[in-house]
Image (cartoon, rainbow, N blue to C red):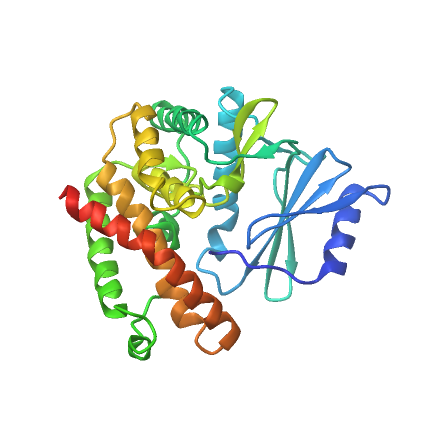
Length: 322
């Protein structure tokens, strides 16, 4: 979204040795598209982020990262989650380094060994209850996280991207115009909902790779997309992630199981709309973005064809409920 991959591996390894000394072991750890993650000495995860000067977040990046740390560690202190950030030896939580046309940020967290989940029936209620605890804490806590309007005011977290209608795609993508119109309508409905209801500070990236079984307990990882928004967006993002790991035949039962175990008042329609929004934003952006790269465009078309079954299901499900 805001941060970008940083390719200078030599600079990164020199930086880490300056921070931690020569006598360390580093092992690359899989992470998001915006993160470089290393396990150091099998004890600490070092997270590296690069922010270019052109980013709209450039002058608010430290505040953005500080509130993430604040939220993560508050959940840890309340024993609601096992994931936590750690300070550096000088007591600072974030190390920054000016590099060519941007800044590198380094953070460190506890290394938690465990197994990422699969979305089975016995797991869904546990996830719902975990999210309830997060949302209750966010609502009831006296902690105020600094607002970042450039991010928090977006209708959805991926809406930082620029979306445009590409008429040429009408030839290749069946009903492309209809999906674009659906995107416009759904965006408008979600914008009105965000204006009408109070926001909570939410995780906002609750897919399977960010949910870990650690010591027989569910632990939520990767709070890098955390922001002020409706709790329905948190659940919508979870439903989107759930749909990627299942199919249309089994998704409704699992989604209903989630809602029956999520005990706070919630608007299920908005949850489904946020899930639909995530699908539409991903595909309508990359179908245009990848046009000049034939290999990427081929991949995106195949991906869209596969996932539009779920897009159509979500749209019809929302329309039917209305």
